[in-house]
Image 1 (cartoon, rainbow, N blue to C red):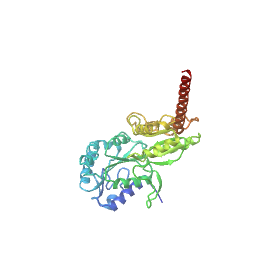
Image 2 (image 1 turned 90 degrees about the horizontal axis):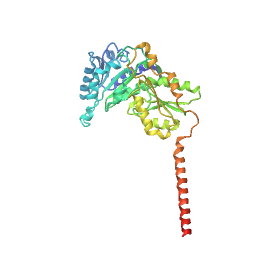
Image 3 (image 1 turned 60 degrees about the horizontal axis):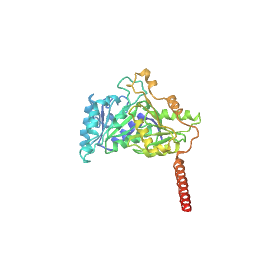
Image 4 (image 1 turned 120 degrees about the horizontal axis):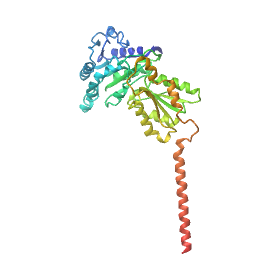
Length: 363
């Protein structure tokens, strides 16, 4: 076990991938000798040479276009978009080519590309330096979308992404780059792509979070416990593919669900999660699925960021809207309904038999 920050874990993952596979290349704006704005690629050019880790011009569309060509040529490129909103000029390449090439070639050509994007808030960044852009990518078929919340997840999920035969958008929560935790690099302890993680068990409500919202969700769960509310926290980890099974099983036990995200609420990932819960767990719910999100506005300036981002208080206020009084367990409603229908059918049959007997006696 080694204590390291998420930034160090990502750097180690890139370093190990470069060591193990000569086809892996790392490139982007300032990722070479400088080591990137957040120093994720620190020392890689020095240790592996400019052929393996190199700077590019300030042209995000060109960076991703270069990655497409290299992947078609047999390489496994890992590219960095310097900030979340800087990736928007590359979206045409991502949506039109990266996401579609396997389908366009009927499976004959895969694109093993990783697009690393520092995203979300928490650093007091100005316009174009803080954005929650996951909604664009999860709504683009052909992409896998990953967002770790811990250093250990960051290491193993990035290794998975680099080894994957298909393109992965790897969203890195900027405000968690310097969060430190124990990481075991010798034995994998985390789940693979497509699997969520229950990071705190509970019995009264399921609180779903991902990426930068996970620490806030855990803090809210701890605060809610003081009020006697037992909160189960799910770290979704991978947004595409999505783990319905873990979420459905959890909501089936708690009967309530709240989703928290930094992105604005309208049309966001939280709305998709809420819809999936409603579709699969409607008969198990004690209360409507609720969301806690950023406001439906462009990302605000630094001094207003704290008011925009969901915090513990807003999550606790949302819990107040749930029904925590004693309510019947919805898992028993089906049995109760069946018993009622059976009793009604029996009574109806008895009444019909009585009427038939009376008619015969009259005749």
